[in-house]
Length: 489
Ligand code: GLN
Picture 1 (cartoon, rainbow, N blue to C red):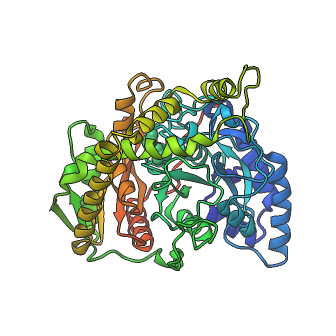
Picture 2: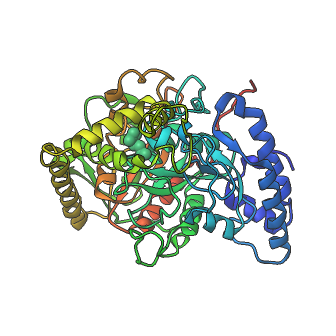
Picture 3: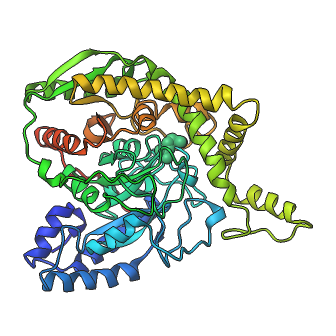
């Protein structure tokens, strides 16, 4: 069988189970696809063909022994801030260029246990700071739909790899939108789970009160399967929630008749492209025709402060988290200086890129004595207000629906000199992240030939409801697993 890389994970699982092809054949097909399109896309920082083939052989044994799970033998991409034992993990930074972790993250351990096949570590903005995957020390990733455009970020490598057929599913991380925004810009599905749903043991930290790992996939069913695999309590992460995870696949194929959906007014602002506005409007009509009760009379007035709150809290936490990269313990180390201090300064000065330095400076400033109350503490208070407004809304609605991003994919380089314009691209994904709520993005059509994403935001631990709505929408919309042509280089 040819073109196995075009299959969704659930289709591939069926094919493996019924012996139409082997996991080695499936992996070979994906590896060949990587070879063909990677020069144009640059979705990976490191590819792991040998490891993948070895894991594929083990997967075939599991199928033969009747011990397969839905992810056994499925080629996955893993964002390069997810620590993998023996496989270089860079977080997109030069400072971790040679870092080979001595242990596995919880999420990768779960994937391995399920029998998944890791084909590589995906490209990302350095330390997950960015919205375009241009802030990577390993070159920018390109959008599979149009290589002059960015794939979004920071999990742009994962989103592009899924869309380009360089893996079937992938893991990303979302601090303020880094799964949902690239999913939207690359035309795939992505979920930021509830804060605490997925263990961060072995995840390179950016903003610890915000970071969460989640799936990117070609359809909602695969997204549910991935989240099922990685979620659940892990005592090694003190923020991991003991709440039992329901079987998310159980929420597939349910109708959404009578579901109450709030559409917050504040998300329809100047700066949203007309093509995006049109697709969202059509999506709301479709949801209405499916029996959802759509209420546009919802106001979340603190929404406008989410960007400021995020850009105080995330950089503050980043400045603390990134203090560990001092050239002493691991990673890049400058040794030519005359003193320890000079070495440390040079290590950080040479190891970090411009955006990371900007965040460290912002965060250090916001946390410094005399400014702490005015910035960090104030931001935390407004964060509580944002959270409370969502809490009130979920007394009346099952879910909220918004656009995922105000724009479609933008040209490479367009926002690089204007950090504020770059930050604004996350305007719709930041509020739920600040509140710790789960949210998904699903494709809802295109504008100017580029994908548009629809966002559903849920209440705490309501991933089931999100899967239910996203799956029903995807089926009614009828464009799951739509793949771009990526011309040969
Ligand atoms: N784009 C946002 C930022 O630059 C969000 C990134 C993320 O979610 N990791 O911080």
